[in-house]
Length: 476
Image 1 (tube, rainbow, N blue to C red):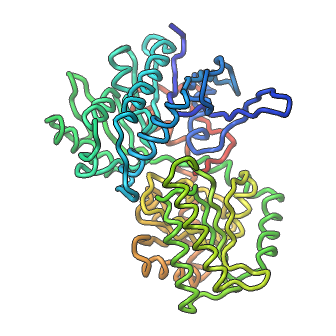
Image 2: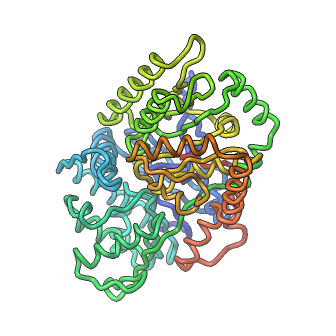
Image 3: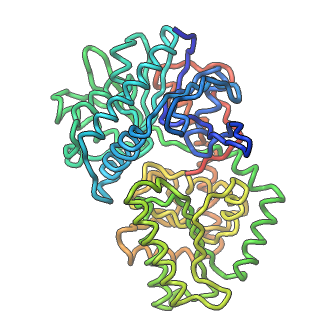
C-alpha cells in the first residue's frame, strides 16, 4: 500500500503525451478547468493523480510532474470505444444534458464502463494510505466511489460531477440506473454545480432506493452521505494577470484591425459539442442580418469551435451542420474580404484566447444545457476595461453566479436575437456597471474557494498552502 494521503481520480491525467520526430515522449500540461482547479491542491499535498494517459494500450510507468505523482491507468482500444466514446459520451452525456441529442444504450458499452471503473477503483485502493482522502471526478467514473468503499471503508471519499445531473424522469431511462446511483452513494460527499442537481440526486435516492433524505443528507448503511452544490470557478487572478499583459492588449487591437474595425464583434468560444448551442447562435445571427437589425461589416461574428470527440458520429454530424450554416451566412451576407462569420475549428493558447475575449464587444455563451461553463467566467475576468457584454444562457450553471449578464433562453430564437441586440445597444455605463459587479464576484469566488469549500465539506483540514491557486487559466 502506498503513502498517498490525497488522491484525485479522473478519466484523464492532467498531462498530454507529445512524441517528437525521433520518437521520444515528453509530457505537457493539459488545458482545462479541472486541471487548473485541482493541480494546486495536489502540489501542496504531494498528492497523486490517477487517470488515463490518453492513448490506447499499455499504460506508461508512474511518473512525477510539477510535484504531483501521476499514475496512468491502461485502456484498450475496445475500452476507449465502448467505455469512453460509447457509454460515457453517447449514453450518459446526452441523457445528463436533458437529451439534447438522442442517447444510445448498448449492453457491451455498460460492460466496458463497469470494468474500467473497477480498474480505477483497484488502482486507487492500492495507492491510498490508511485514512486517505480520495476525490473522484465526473460522469465517466460514477461507479468508483461505491467500488472503492467496498475495498477501503477507511477512506474519505468525495465525488464531483462537472456536468448537469438530470431529473428523475430522465435518469429513469438509464439502463443500470441502480448501479450508477449506488456507485455515487459510496461517496461521503457528492458535489454538483448547482443546487437543483443535488436536489435531483436526493429525489432519486427516495424514488429508486426508498431512502428518506433530510436536507442535504441521506443515510446509507448507517453512514451519512451529503449532496450539495459547489459551483466551480476559475483562477481569476491568473486570468486578470494575463489579460493585462502588453502582449494580450496589443493582440486584441490587432484582432479588431484584422476584422475591419467593426462596431460590434460577437464572439463564441466553445468545444464543438451539440450542448453548446452553436447552431442556434448562428441561426439567430443570420436572422438578425436578414431582419436588418445587424449589418455586415458593422457587425461580425467570430466562432471558435475547438475539436471535440471527433470519432463519435454525433460530433462529426454536428461539425458538418455548423460548417454548412457558416457557409450559408457568408454566402448571403459576406462581402469580398469581409466574411460575416469567422469560423475557427482549432484550439488556441491562453494568450490568444485572452486577446479574443478583450477584442469582443459581446461574448455569446449560449449552451442549451451546461454544468457551469468556465468560458463565461474567463471572459469576465479578461474584461479589464469593463467595456464588454456577456450574453449568457439561462441554462448554463454560470447564470447562477453571473447574474448581471444579459440572460437569454437559447431554445427561443426570438429571445436569443433580442439578447444580442440589447447587448449591442446597451450604454457604456450599463455595460461597465454589470461587468464590474461580475468581476468583483469572481475575485471572491475563484477556483481556490471552490476547492477549499468542497474539501472542507468533506472534512479535510486545510494544510499549509493547499489552496493557493496555480497560474494557468481554466478553459471550458
